[in-house]
Image 1 (cartoon, rainbow, N blue to C red):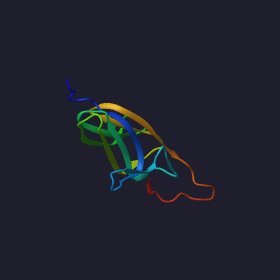
Image 2 (cartoon, rainbow, N blue to C red):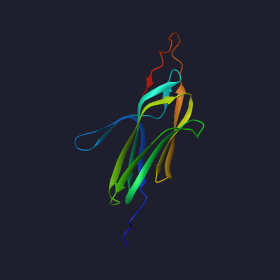
Image 3 (cartoon, rainbow, N blue to C red):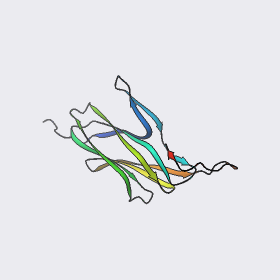
Image 4 (spheres, rainbow, N blue to C red):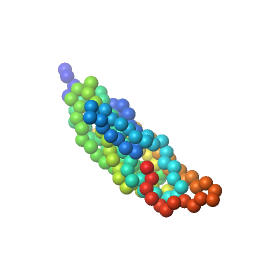
Length: 145
C-alpha cells in the first residue's frame, strides 16, 4: 500500500536579512541573524526573511510562520503558505518575508514554524540594546536589518 500523506520534516529554518535565487535555482541566504543588536528601541526592521526547507513528505500542506513577542503569547506577525510534496525524495523551499516589523522592547522574541498546525521548530531571537560608544549619541530611530 502506498502512503497518500506523510507530514514533512523541516530540514532547516533560518532568520535572515535576504534570500535570493540564482538562475540555476540555488538560493543565496544573506545575513543570517542570531540576534538583533540595536542602539535604541523601538526600532523597525525594514525586511526580515524566514527561509524554510521541507522534505520527506507526501501531500499538500500549509506552512505557518509566526513572530512571537517576549511575553511568549503576543503574535507580532504571521504568514501562511501552501505547498505540495509529491514524493518523499522531493523538497520545498519556502521564504516568508516580513516587512516593517517593529520591535518595541528588548527581550527574547521567537520564530515558530508549523506545518498543518503541528509545531516543527521554535527558536529564540534576542533583541539587545547596546548603548553607543562613549561620546556618541544614537542616530534617530530608523530601520534595523
